[in-house]
Structure formats: C-alpha cells, structure tokens
Length: 179
Image (cartoon, rainbow, N blue to C red; front, side, top):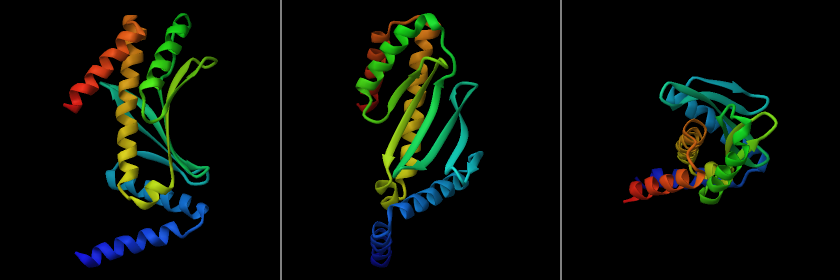
C-alpha cells in the first residue's frame, strides 16, 4: 500500500515538473486512453488534438461531442441545439443567460448566424494532469449538463415554455438530486 502511494506521488511530482507543452501531451494521451478503455466510438485527430464522438442526448437522438487540448486547457464542446426558429431568438438568449447564471461550470453560447446553441466547458490542464480520474469526471459532468441544457431548450422550442419556468424546474430537479 505504501509503495503504491509513493509511486502515485512520484508520478505527480514528475508530471508537475514538466513544461506546459508536455502537460498537453500527457493529458492528450490520458484522454485517448480513456476513450479506448471505455470503448467509445470516436474519431481521433492527432494533429489538431481533438476527439469527436457521439452520445445520446435524449432518447433516440445523438449529439456530437468534441474534446480538445489546446492553450493550456482541456476543452469539452457540444451543440445542444442544431437549429432553432428565428422567431424564438429573444427567448433563446434569455434562456441561455439564465443557464449561464446558474451554471458553476461552462458556458452556453448562442450562434445567431448559424442558429445553433453550444455548451462549452474548459478546465486548466494542471488538474487532469495530476488527478487521473478528473478527465472522466469532466466528461461525465459535461455530458450530464449538456443533456439538461438540451432538454431546457427543447421545452422552449417545442412547448413554448417560458425560460424562467424552465430554469425553476431545473433548479428544483437539482435540489431534489442533492437531497
């Protein structure tokens, strides 16, 4: 047991002593290993250092998720809505603002020109560099939050639900999860 602890600390000490460019390489390798271990079907783009994969965002609907390493950050990005009705643009921005006010991690971005909505999350490389489970936890957090955001925007688009009601329901759901 003590030998494993010493090995763990020596590995962390070694990793933290490296250059920032090496941080990116190590976290990139860890990210690829995780995808292989989990058996996720992914496209790996070595030169650009990103992985593209699809997960179910709602029943029988897939979304593409991108995981990237650059500028000393680990980035997670997905489009939660591919196309929204132009007449809902004001409500889309209101709901995005509400989401951004309650999110502890990440940001909801509305692209008016292409009429899509993304959820982006980034984490400094030092944390996943030192704690091997952090990459997986970040991916799971990004995925779960993406599903909630997607669901909220779908309620707005399909049911014309008010943004304040959508956020209130989400906060209530999160409170119930915590209890």
